[in-house]
Length: 87
Image 1: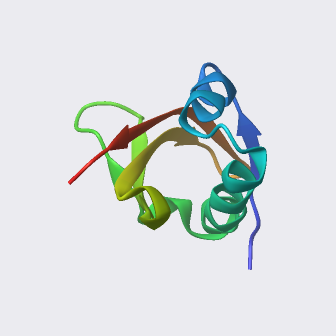
Image 2: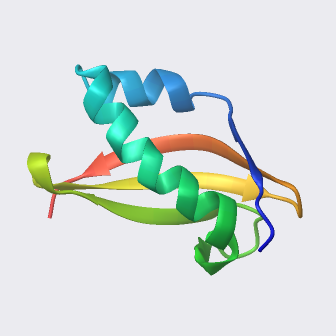
């Protein structure tokens, strides 16, 4: 199994801190997402005519969904942005 390196780029850290006032909650969301990105990032959805991919992650304690936007190459996933949406 090939594992990619994960890098948090651009506004990702700032947006994450605005979505979660509790750092522990943010870490819990990221732990699962990082495993997925490091092993299965190519299973995300790509935005047409771009190299930007996205992954939707449920944030059940807050009754919302998180959308993480990323780019990747064979060795690295670059997390660029994270947004929250309610259903």
